[in-house]
Length: 339
Image: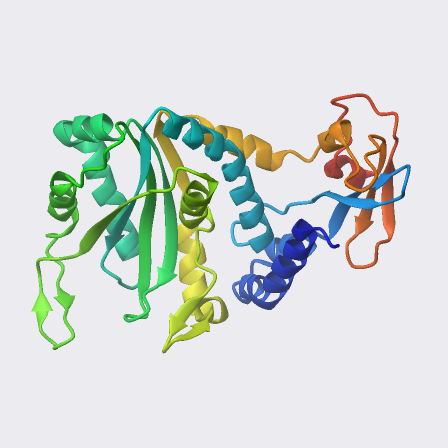
């Protein structure tokens, strides 16, 4: 049976080839396009010395923001870090809620993105009363940016997903203060919104949705984390009920997206989750073969394996890692490529 991670790797490589590489090349980002093209091409395989079963041992990462393989790998890193924290939080009879902050769809991307960023800053940082109220209700949390095209407007729709930790086992939807505060900072900025009937409304530019994560098991928490952190740019948009990826194929749209999101953070944490982002970044960058230290063959149970670096398309062996390496030795992909 093929390793699920290997199958996903091939799927994401195909998406990169069909969408991301051409999009990057269309705006002159040839270096990043080359990095994406090689992402996941060099794969670590652990061979069991007893039965010769091959086990997937990781793949190189390009770390380009739009690479589907890297987006998936970063999500896995977040899952490893967040799930145990949230599980422990539920054991203490607390719960997690999901907040979605939205703003009016607009073009170019800079317009709604600045409205979103400025609104959240006013809500969380600038007003002392709101900030104190926020910290009391949400002692810890994570915020993630997602950008897509509005399915009705066809314009940019940036929004924030927040997973917030809340104390107490009873969920009371007493969030009028938060909705009112968001509308106050975002909903009356003197920008008119065109209605379906052709008239204009000057009073609404954003909204806030709140949902409690009811399931205390892995399924509920897992789904919430995946929904909130799976990507910064949505993979697909739907028009007339059909999936399309038009902003990747449209040079002007992708250039607007690429330029505006450059150096923008996707995630940030606060309170009880502060510092976890650094942990995730550290885990994501690791290209060591530490998995070999705890290797157990899933077929025969042998604990001794040999690490080989191969081309995923041809299975050509590029580099063998000695079996007798010491724990913590830096024999990662980066060094293998230098040899």
